[in-house]
Length: 179
Length: 101
Image 1 (cartoon, rainbow over the protein chains, first blue to last red):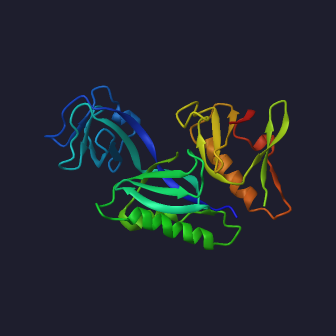
Image 2 (cartoon, rainbow over the protein chains, first blue to last red):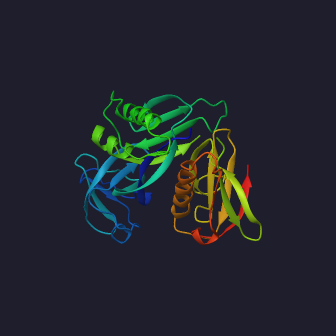
Image 3 (cartoon, rainbow over the protein chains, first blue to last red):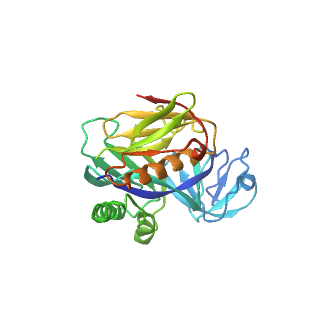
């Protein structure tokens, strides 16, 4: 019986690479950005993919400068991705044939399927970080898989996982990939 | 229990696409979500197979969401309703081809 988790993925608003040092002033600076036109808003999620760190937009200073959380300013030459803090689109992820769920890192949870086929056996869910040592992402996904499996056969898509992730550690998913 | 989407393809009548063993549905072709994201949508199966639908250009995620909803609807049907026939008028954009890799 097919079952899916309907996981809200917070949409990408814009991305780029910093070209100014914003560490002292708690800023993200990109002289070629158009943050206001792109609709970047307070509360949006900033993923510094160069260092794999996360922060939140606390102010849109101009088209080219954002204010971020204290102590989280980005240095120059950092690749970043800004995701909406409020708008998400549901993506279905298989909840069957699961072998194990792992908290792979503070910002990723993997669903490892019982499949011998490389490229189709690990679903990586990238999310805002949980505290070091926390297994909140894993625990929430595990519980959702169990609930999905327990649900009526006509309930093919289990849509309570987004709320559960938020309730667990304010976890917001920013990407899902199979590989 | 086998379930299929019956998808109208331009000049080819309808083609069946399996709804079983799908792991994820993504925008883009078999090269990944960043490859032709507005004109292709790919279903990834547990076997490693990928079925790519080529369709008219559309806002990101709209076609993927339509296919996701259709797969769920298909799987909710009674056992003897093996196919979910998608009327051409219901497609967000016309499908011009379906390929497996």
